[in-house]
Structures are given as structure tokens and as C-alpha cells.
Length: 88
Image (tube, rainbow, N blue to C red; front, side, top):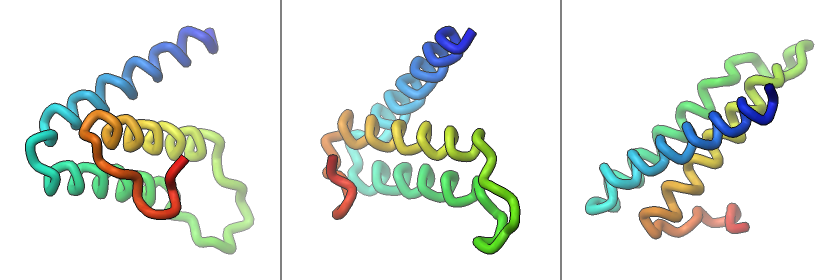
């Protein structure tokens, strides 16, 4: 089950990244806006205060990873450089 889910998540990540890249590739400004939107989605996942007694749920950590993966793929497909400090 885990392998099937991993495969579906990978396919969804790639499909979304390709759709964003194709729709913004002729406009660096549109690509930047799409990447900002991905960051906003990531920031909106965790609305708990930093001193919250509860741990961050596992699905939030997974969603952060997925959004980071989509953003990396969009940058690769559109040949947009990584932001400073995030180069791998």
C-alpha cells in the first residue's frame, strides 16, 4: 500500500509541477508568482503558535516536503535558479 501511495504522490507532484512550469515558462514573473504561491501554501499549513504544546502532525511535514518537491521541479523545468541559501 505504501509503495502505491508513494507512486501516486510522485505522479501527482510531477503532473502539478509540469502544469505550473508549462503555464508560466514564457514569463519569469508568472513563474515567480507560482513559486510564491507554493510557499504561501506551505506557510498556511501550520497555523499553530510556535509555543504550542502539540507536535506538528506528520501529514503537515509530508505536505511541506511535497510542496518543496513541486517547487524544485518547477524551478528545474523553467530553469529558474534556486533562491539563495537553498541550493542543493
